[in-house]
Image 1 (tube, helix red, strand yellow):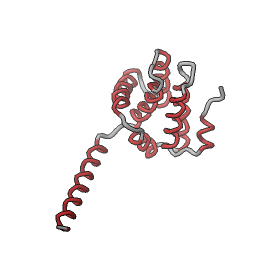
Image 2: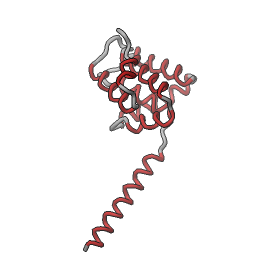
Image 3: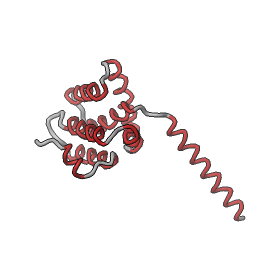
Image 4: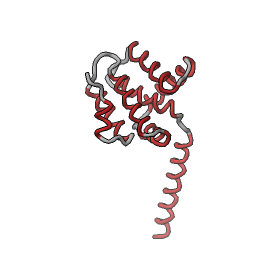
Length: 150
């Protein structure tokens, strides 16, 4: 009886490991990861207008030196993934692996720029930025440093 239970849990653990490996194999690029986070802030208040969409393009071009076609493709992927995302970990962990603390601070500054693109800051946008900053392992002082002085 104990052997059957032990075998059951071992098989279950093996299945979960296989599922996890498959989920990680659909690698997200660093550009898409950043774009998804920007899209999450853009979509947070329930509407996104031309100003926000234009700001998204500008931020991605500046951050990654991309051309218009590349930005469009990244934004298309990011919007799809943003709509399907259940959390930010998949994207923030990718950024944590590849970006220095200074680069992560820049990303959070860009999130603030996105939040203010429509001229006002919704509390849900601020909440999402705080959550992302925590997942990017920014200390509180670094997070405060990223906030614009409006």
